[in-house]
Image (tube, one colour):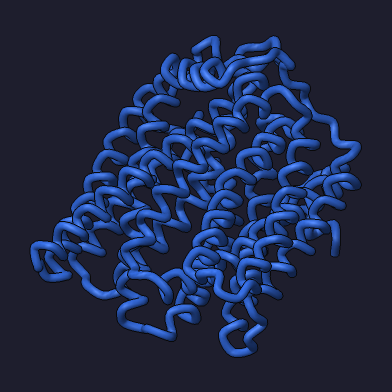
Length: 449
C-alpha cells in the first residue's frame, strides 16, 4: 500500500520522511490561514463599508514590502531552516496575543479584524517565500520539478481543513478568540516539526556576505534585468497583482451586498471550492509542466486572468465573478506557482532568495497596491458623482481586463526570450560544472517553436 502510494506521488526511497515533514508544516500554515482569512474578511465587511477593504489591502502590501525588504537582508545569508523556525515562532506568538484585542471591552472590533487580516496576509506572502526557497535548497532542479507539486498539495489540504472549520464556526460558534488560540497551538506543532524532521536535512549553504538594504534590493533587480525571461515574468506578476486584486474585490463586494449575514458561510464554501480544485489541479501540475514544457506552462495564468476579467465584465452578479476569480486563483496557486518555483531553482543559491522575493512578493504586492488604490479612487469618485454601482463597477473591471492583456503580452515576450535566457551565465548553478542545458530536465525538448 505504502509502495503504491509512493509510486503514485513519484516519491523515491529516502525522500518520504522529508517530503511528508515539509508537507505537514505547509499543511499547518494553510490551515491556520484558511481559518483566519474567512474570520477576518467576514468580520471586517460586517463592521466597515466594503470598499474600505481596498485601503487595508494597500496598507497590507506596503507592510509586506517593508517586511520582505528586511527579509531580503537575511534570506540569502542565514540558515533557512532556522529562519523558517523563527518565522513560525513569531506567528505562534502573534496568534496567541491577538485574541486579547477581541477580549478587551471597548476595543474597536474593526481594528481587531483589520489586525487579524494584516497578520493573515503577511503570513500568506512571507511564509511561502522562505519555505519554497528552502525547498530549492534541499532538492536539486530535477527533484524539485517532481516533488514540488506533491509538497504543494499539502497546502491545499490544509486550506480545506481550515476553511471547513471556518464554515463550521457559522453554526457551532467556536468564537474568534478560541480559533486564534487554536492557530497558535498549530504553529507550536509546526515548530516541533522543524526542529525534528528538518534537523538533519542537507541544504546548500548560502553566502554569508553582509549586504545593505539597497544592495540586497539592487542585487535581485539587477539579476532580473539582466535575464530577459525573468524580466518579462516579473512584469507579468505585477499585472497579475492588479487583475487578481480587482477580481477578488468584485466577488467580495457583490456577495456581501447580496448575501448579508450569509456571507461568512458563502466565503468559507467558496474558498473551500477553490482549495479542492487546487488540490486536483496540483496533482497534475508536474505532468502539465512536462507535457507543455516549462516555458509554455506560464501561459495559463495570463489567459485565465484575461478570460476571467471579460466574464466578470459581461456577466453581472457574484456567481459570475466568483467563477472567474476562482479559476484565476487556482491557476496562480498551482501550475503557475510550480512553474515559477521550478524556474527559480536555476538561480544561483546566493541570489535566489532576492530574486524570488522580487518575483513572488514585490511585484505582485506593488500590483495589488496599484489595483487597490485605483479601484478605491474609481468607487469613491463614482459615489461622489452619484454614478450607479453598475457604472463604476464596469470602469474598475476595465482595469482588470487591462492587467490580463498586459499579462498575455508579457507571456509571449517571455516565451520568445526563454531559450536565449537559458544560455545566460548568470543562470549557471554553482554546484554544477556542466552546461546549464545539460542540467535542466524540464522537458522542453518537445516544444514546437
